[in-house]
Amino acid sequence: MLRLFRILAAATVALAAVGAFTLINVFGSTAVAAPTTVTLNAAADTYLSTASPNSNFGRAKTLAVSDTTYRALLRFNVSLPSGSTVTNIALRLYSNTSVSGSLIVHPASNSWSETTVTANNQPAWQTAELARSGLLRARQYASAALPTNAITGSGNFNVGIDTTTGVQGSLDSREGAKRPQLVITYDSPSSPTPTPTSTATPTSTPTSTAPGSAPQNIRIDPAYTTDLEHTARFLWDPVPNATNYRHYINGAAIAGEDDTSASETVRNLQPATAYTFSVGAFVGGVEYKSAPFSFTTAGPGSTPTSTATPTPSISTVLPLVENVGFSGSGDISDDAVIWADTATPANSVVIADNKSVSAGGIGVFGMDGKLIQFRQDGMLGNVDLRSGFVLSGQPIILVGANNRTNDTLVLYSFSATTRTLTPVTARSIPTVSPNIGFCLYHSRASGKFYAFVTPQQAGSVQQFELVDNGAGLVDAVLVRTLPMSSIAESCVADDELGHLYVGQETVAVWKYGAEPSAGSNRVSVDTAGSGRLVAEIEGMSISYGANGTGRLFVSSQGDSTIVVYDRADNNPFVKKFRVGSNGTIDSVTGTDGLDVTTRNAGPGFEQGLLVVHDESNSGGTTSNLKYVPLSAVLG
Image (cartoon, rainbow, N blue to C red):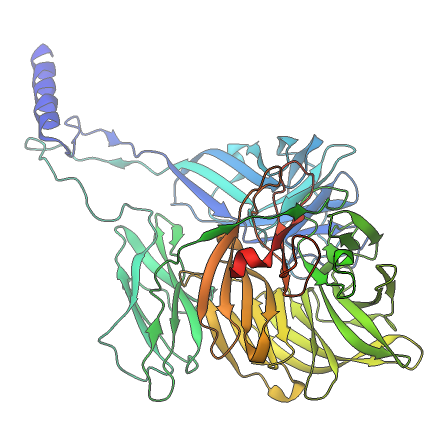
């Protein structure tokens, strides 16, 4: 025995002196793999409201939870190697609120659909308790340790969430910036190691991608030249130990195309159209997905292009004012529109949404950031404004928004004298369901006013003509729909040039004709993942200059920046910037909605104003808005 120990020790020392090596157990016993930890994002989530028992909230960016009125459902797609032993499970949910209470995690049925489940048709609620989180703290993940027997293998894993008594919270959903996560640690099945017949052999340190890595170096195959208007072929570096690859166009899996090759030919594309391609590698039953690769198919007589765009430099501008925000907690206010008082610029206002589930509405803020008026009118989404709409023979300042509570349009008349809003909606005007975004358009060609409403999931952007109903109220008539393959919250219309810009959050900024007769033809201004925009693509606005000049502003939420394009021609890129901190005013994070005007908006904003949403407002309980001099941006 002593002799055997000396042989083993000597062999170990000799191997260690070489450097990296493969150690073979000379006893022929079982080799134990190191534990593997995977982090899964929610595949589906929603919340249920007994206050709105027939409403579905499957595309909401937040999950409302409480002990009675609100419950959340989450689903994760778990894929583990056969025979694995789960050693730890943690559910992580990002809280927008600080409350003296915890989340309670329950088992849940798999019999629900994210886009159709409501409080009335939900599966039976399971009261058994799996775990509780710690106290909820705003802008932090709450974690709950689940029993290891909660997951016994691959498949859908569902949980229900409510809270301890007297608590109401707001969590980010999978459509939000901080998605729900399930963190699983497991031991892979052990395998016998054969008894060696010779001394262990040193091996070099691996230089290829480690198992479990996402595919890298995605590129267009330059040797592929077949029908480049409708087809593209992609290559990537193989991932060691990958058993197969799954391919995605614009975030959607390509059915029936899973295979083992480190290449993929994508067909049935549209000419001169921007797309994103990504690929997932399956290692040990777990998918590791690449970042999106952006490309544009060839047009007639041209060649396809990919966006290997150099990362632009990012400048910083400083805010002068921040608004007080709304009462409540969480990211409840994320869009705004500016009204500049040309007679008395200091009386200009910022009108903002409040998308609180229980106390949402619309508010008017002064240039000092203080609240002038609040109307509790429902969970309002995006807001916009146009002057000159004729109602009962008189021009009014028309303000509009989409109401997410009941998927309708809401319209107001804004008084320049009192700086308050008065409802003028003729009836409950239904929109696409669920809706998420909104913008207005005033046609120079016809003089007519239009509203656009965007979908919270695959569906259609709707265009409504706004009309005086003859009784002093505003009605709407649907005049056009534009198909959209996934969520597209933001939009903005260029009244002078007749363009409509729509931000498909994880895909591209699209430019359409804004007239109802323009059809559905579109071109891409820029794409997510191109080097400038980092998904999600959010708020947009236009600064108007003389003779068709000006700028298009786009919120790049993924890196909390704003990207600026020229308003004219094919919208070439101009610059990228972020909003930093200034004294007691914190920097902007999680940029969503924004608005801009070149008009004098009062002291400090004589050359114009940019208003930007700040998701994580330091020192406040809710998100708020930062006011930035436009001169600091345009120089």
